[in-house]
Length: 59
Image 1 (tube, helix red, strand yellow):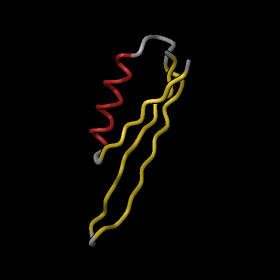
Image 2: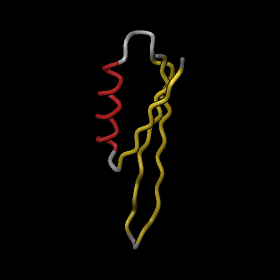
Image 3: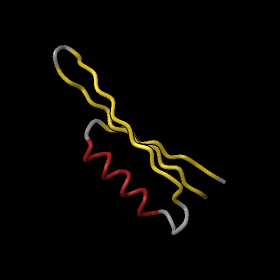
Image 4: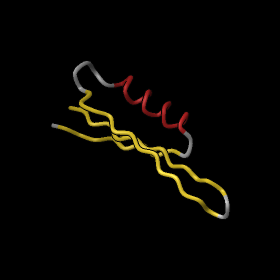
């Protein structure tokens, strides 16, 4: 069976830590793929970023 885990953080370092923690718990051969995305928008003159990742893995 395949599953996905989605992570969404405001800072890239927070995303990195969350994904690394999750990957450390997977067993050899479970990881299928990791998709990474960055979205940016402006709000009231301030640049806002959203960093996300989707991990596809076997159970």
